[in-house]
Amino acid sequence: MQLNSAANRIVSVTLPLLLAFVNAPAAGAQARDTSMKHSAAMPHSNGMAGMMSGPHHALAMAYGENLAAFARAVNVDAKRSNMVNVELARPATAEMRRSFDQMKTHHQAQMAAAGSMTPDPDAMSSSARRDSMMKKSMPNHSAQMMKMDDMQAHMTSIETHLGMLESEVAATSPNATKVIAHTAEILKACASAMHMPMNSSGRMGRGSAR
Image (cartoon, rainbow, N blue to C red):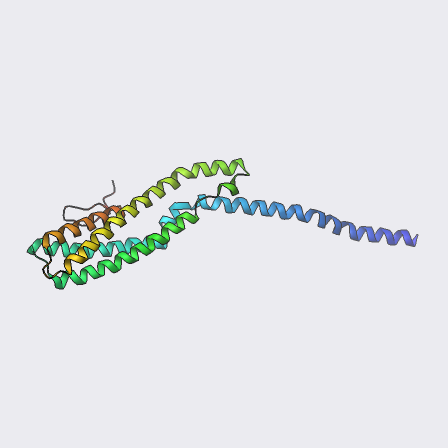
């Protein structure tokens, strides 16, 4: 009788432990599956829209506005006097170069962030629901990438005309017509890159809400 009682006590203690060990892998797998679903959904919940409102985007836009402000100052002065005031044009052009370099740095960081947010098809392929979610997110993702490609083209235009402007204002007698033309192209590219229309005076604005 004592042996039977001892055996019963051993079974009563060890059985719950064995059941716990058996159920633990299943619970862990379920938790991992839930975590994977959550992490797979994250790029779609924020995605490109979140990246476009991030710090690199904000800084690129701020440096772009600074670049445009100095280009406008040179452009307006050259138009008014029909000559190039090198005491204005040279420091302004140097500041334009500094602003452009910073703008380019943050734009490249933004592009890198966009690439890291691209959904991984292999990680998503195990679930029809995730596949559906991925398909729904792709049009918005593609549209944002097209906008960034457009911005890259505008950045190339800015860099080209800025280089020509630097060469012109460094000359002994800079040509006002060329300086006006290059600064005008820089202003146009800045406005397009930042999706900000220019008014009749060449200033960029946010546009009026209707």
